[in-house]
Image (cartoon, rainbow, N blue to C red; front, side):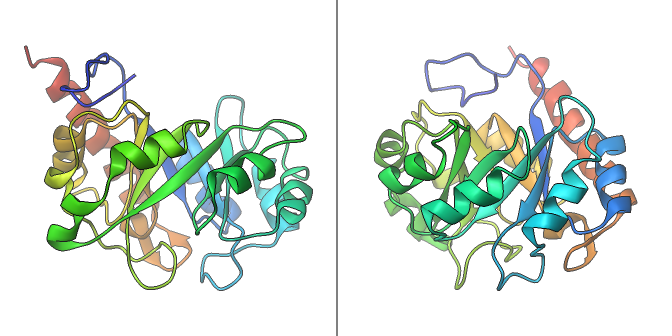
Length: 234
């Protein structure tokens, strides 16, 4: 597990996990898997340009080999709908990316019990210092991880990065760094935050919802380079 070095938890001794989100095509799913992604995200939020239908998500998820997890992203969706859609995708992890309360997240992930991620929308600029990530992580203690994304108009997919250096150093949750990551900046993000995982969408695209195999390969290579660098630190 990779954690922030000041958290009192294990430092980076294993590889950073990689989630590639917003996939819409078979060839992109295959290329993401070939590049080395650990998880593939499908957007269940209709207003998003990367949205796919539940049936389409299930179809694409069937291409995934063992140990590559499908992740379904929801925004303020009704509990019954979350459960009905997730039932179509065996083994899926849920991602709550809207204004869901801890209770709503737990209800959506229940029956049967599923692992889930909770997105924290971190303000841009100096506002990141005012976001109480320790409290947020404690409130959502049932989440498998807290996904850190930039707070912009709408929900996710902005391609904007928040100020990583303003995050508190003592968060006990698994952290997933997201928001504006690219092959060019992900090494800096991992070095600064020491996340358990990283999540990329627009940073590996040629257009919204259309991924580039070359950019996905470059992103994974950069993550591995960051891991190698951190493994050499005292």
